[in-house]
Length: 123
Image (tube, rainbow, N blue to C red; front, side):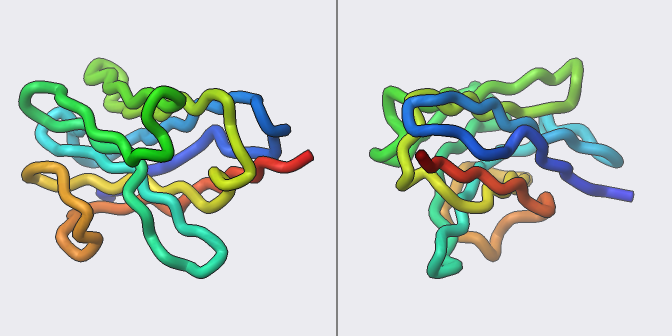
């Protein structure tokens, strides 16, 4: 089966950190760009960060710049999102999505999606 599985979410206090993992099976991630999306209370999807398949370039939403880091470990077929100095506004369900092309905010273009992992930032 072809699938992505997210892990690493949880409940954390403001200012804390989490590392999310996106592990692929049935295909290799090195040929895909990977985006982390967040689904908030209104159920909208917001692109948080993307890492490209070719040059390893990265993109970040303005709210994530300076706090989050995205990285790829091809040997482990896994992409990570390191989340530091977390804020309540970061709360939501985080999904990783893979596309056989360039990074894009257009949700419908992605080839594979994980099931999501909940991140809650609260005192």
